[in-house]
Structures are given as C-alpha cells and as structure tokens.
Image (tube, rainbow, N blue to C red; front, side, top):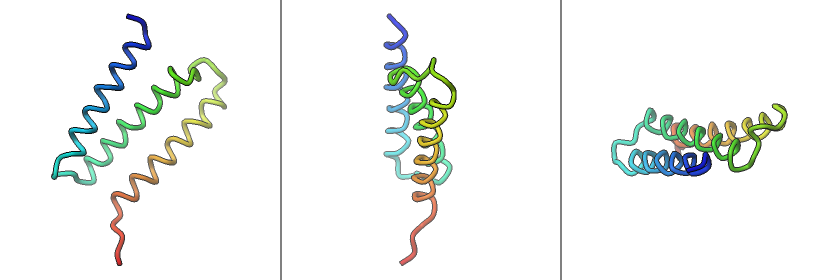
Length: 85
C-alpha cells in the first residue's frame, strides 16, 4: 500500500473516534477540545498529503494551517461558551 492509503485509513480511524466521542451524552468541554484537536490533526493531514502542501514553502502551509486553527478555535469557543438569552 502507498502512503496515501495509510493516510486515508488514519483519517477514517480519527473520524470514527470523533464520531464515538461526539455521539455520547457525556460530551463535556474537555471532550469537545479533544474532538477539535483530532479535527485539527485530520485537517493538517489533508493539507499536507491530499492538497499537496507538504513540500511547498512554509509561508503557504502556514497560511492554510492558521486558517484551519482559527476556524477550529472559533467553533470550539462557540460550543464551550453558552449563549444566554
């Protein structure tokens, strides 16, 4: 098997873990942070291997990685901080 197949299997396993953690009723702030960290790792794998940015200049990789990190932080904050009506 080639490297892409291993990355694909790893992405599948990480997605299964996040599905398991997110579907339980004991979802707490810590579980949400763990899910978002796994999501960041999955995003980095996609950026590096499937978008082909692993071997480009660092500034191009950082642009996409910082965008991913910003979105994940905003989603995490929206889950953790309750909205009061």
